[in-house]
Image: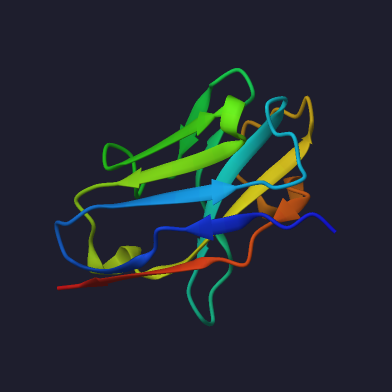
Length: 125
């Protein structure tokens, strides 16, 4: 079974930055929509950002202007640059890949087929 692999999480003070990466061994992602989600215990998984195979990006209102999603199709790697981090950004962050030639106008977990195990991001005040 295909498993995506996130890295780059950690602990940072408010106002700091982190860059998450998502490797996709065994899965060609150049023609798939990709996304980042996050989840805190007791809450539903929340869509953070997505990027289509053509490079169209979409962001949750809570992260617009602070987070940037990007992809390196040659390396089959997805990134999430997170700046001006806030304590409310604390969560487990997951990357996900959609179907072949997928394009979604919303960032919904049900649209994505392949998932990683997650990387923890903790932002202190």
